[in-house]
Length: 311
Image (cartoon, rainbow, N blue to C red; front, top):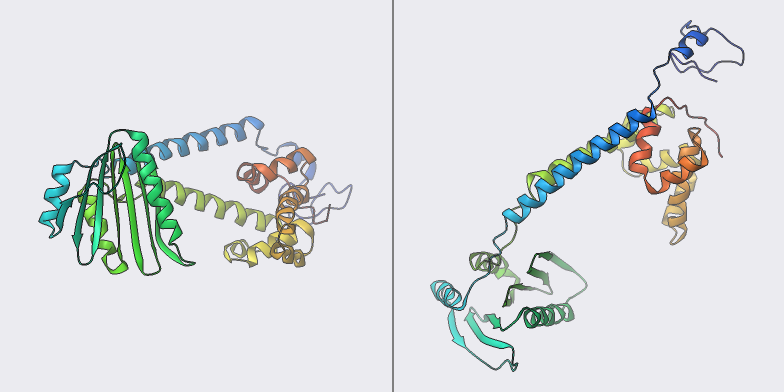
């Protein structure tokens, strides 16, 4: 039993708190507990805010993309202006290929293909993607796998080579070159209308920042309620150790996180027992496994007390 005013432990039957002197009966009767409506309103407000920011972020991302593609004449002119030698080749045997141009420079080439329909374009694009993946090494960087509307782009740098393939409508463009030419290829693709995003959009970063602040606040408050310093929640690994100690009573159980398969069960039990450690019902504890972004807020900011015992 705890004092409703200061949180100090009381003996059964105590009316007055020895720490703060508060009349526990009076304080208890006047505690401003947060209603179910308050939590529903809070979560609905959070959801609406995040959805607005997500829509804003998505529109900003798409708006920052140069993904209109190009036509044959523009491809030829752009490549020649950038010092490439361009030639038409129909060695690509297919009834669906209308034009196939190859532009060469510095010992590498850029392929530009125009097809008669979208299915053929998508098929050729996938063939290039599979070809790239067959050359992929164990270490890769600058990986892009992006899709929006009819636009697709896959890029990767591996084994000293940069690969880029993109499609839009009935066109496919592909290039592979030494990694030193990666930025040059990116700029070329961008100028041709198969570009990269200038960023995820400010809405995306606002969402990430708000989520980060919210999680810091939640874990800080939970640590304080459990009797630990709030800033412990900011220390990587150690914060998981403390959370394990709060939930299970022993931090040594953290070692289970490093055992395959067992770690999956451990995380489920961690969320379940964490809720139980704050006196929550079995149903609430189960919800904490699947919806902990919501339920952890309740644990952190409601009037529950840490019971400090293994369940």
